[in-house]
Amino acid sequence: MGNAVHDKDSQLSYLKNRLNMFLEVLDSMDPESTDVEDIDRLLNMLDELEFKQEQFKKDWNLKRV
Image (cartoon, rainbow, N blue to C red; front, side, top):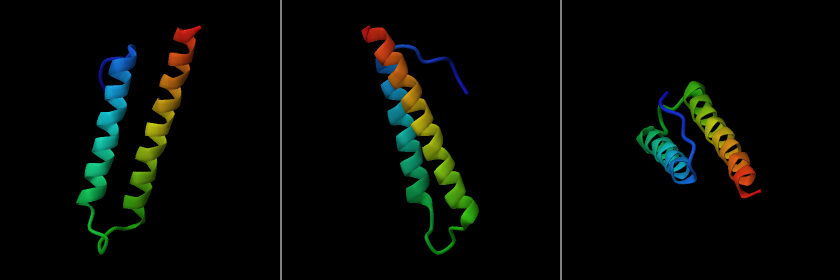
């Protein structure tokens, strides 16, 4: 997808950008025409965001020790 993100500021920026991307997708959806695949895609985006957050959180905790 891109270069690895190692420092905390870049990681936070990455998470914010992904969250904004999620919100843009959500805002662009028409409730009347949204189907199960669309909802699955949103849930997948949230799962990926949560995974990255946990990954970065572990990295931050390691750097504090």
